[in-house]
Image (cartoon, rainbow, N blue to C red; front, side, top):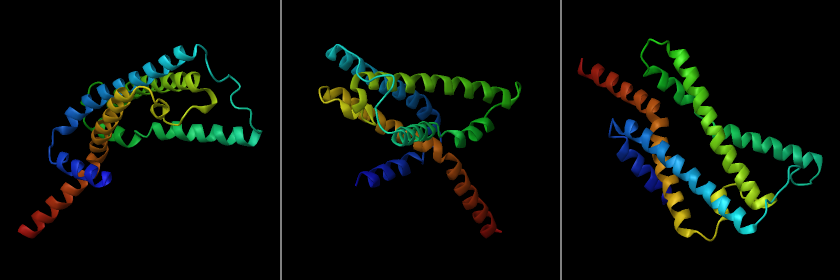
Length: 188
């Protein structure tokens, strides 16, 4: 049912051509708030325990399990950085001078640096708060602050709706061009 609702919202929002520009700023603000909520709850959990949980050596498992977990963590990090498809669309909107590739290199460097700082800080705080029992999604580990968790989950939903619109723009352009081309051919 939620997938159908999500799809219906996406179909409605795809009818607004300027939604992507609005969505981009909103997504950044919501992403910042989500991270701040996760960081705040993690720091509060650390303070309530009075100690840092976990260790630098991590969970003491067999070397095979630790290697598997390390590769799984790298896969999660790679999945978090799936923005390469959007980069070409962003580059198409840039004006020269300066050259597009220089602007994109700088923007990508800053974007990856800021994203890495946010993800690593939430990861470190989550591991310090929960130790070896840290959940895959930091927000699922908190049971005390229902209102903050609900607000963060609402931000996640709004963020995903906007992110989906941004990622789907190339597909929308292809479909539009097919309809326009077929419309002109039938009119001739």
